[in-house]
Image (cartoon, rainbow, N blue to C red; front, top):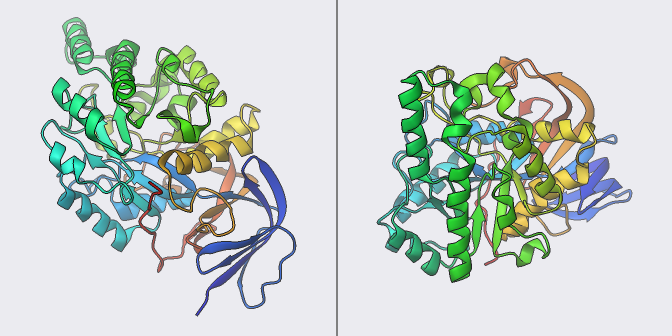
Length: 445
């Protein structure tokens, strides 16, 4: 039987405008948008003036499965995303074992097909010696190839010049890179070890994983992409120094080199290490306020294309260790929209621009099929948002498996009340409506 849903009296935020009216969904897809619609027999969701946004697409997450499920799982973290309005995610390959063969990659898809509440895709991982496996990747079924040009978390560093040349010259699909120069970082670590011993203060993190290390690696990636006309996407930009590498004078769909900024690099700066310490230790590091300000300018003038999270949970016990022992990564997917809404309320960014950078741009950048917009014929992924609801993050409200957040005790203004995935209401007023699952993302390539 056909399944229909009507969302009544919503403020629909889509493609730079806000319209008021009803939204009708049939068999998982948007069918009619706007006006007062007749929908006898349909499931009814009363928006009552709440804002309806397309489901957020997070193009960079670490859900830790397989091998690290004491930190997180695809099931747990997809639910955390759903609670924050994230309906689709793209997950990184540095699990245990890493997804560096087609068989290991498909094993992750099989887990997601059984357990993910959100739609999903998984990056194929590149290593120094798996080019043949990488070249077997189906660009219509896989979001991209991930190249760690800095080792970050896990043992997937690609540092051989010949390997990088081969990847950039032969891979026909999108290559996403983590860009930090490993040799510069190692030299900085040695210098700080000499000065402090093992007791290096956390505020030294952005000096160790420095702006120089970021720029050297990003410049290398961009040079290779220009040399071979590679489709390059650089993840989690964190410095003012790198921003001249990117363009804002052509439409996103025409760019061969694109860039992402993560919510924590927009929200925090190095002054926050004093209060949050290793809880906000991440790679690339959160840096000084002038870098934060430059990232904002580049986001708003379209040198930076996408806002993502790099959601990377660890246990609280793991994070509460000394500098070198504490792993890098922060659980953010549940609160990424709230973080951006803080800047909306401050007048820094409009709701329409948040939707552009978190929903539309990832769909355009990765050429995702029929998602990222509230558009007739597209899959009905969406979130209802009560902009006026003020609430406080508590341990009980945290959905991520790790059970902690850097925002514990903080109040936010604006809350996701309902989330729909493929036309099905999967979350409503703090309750998960299990029984339906996400779908594998496909790509128009």
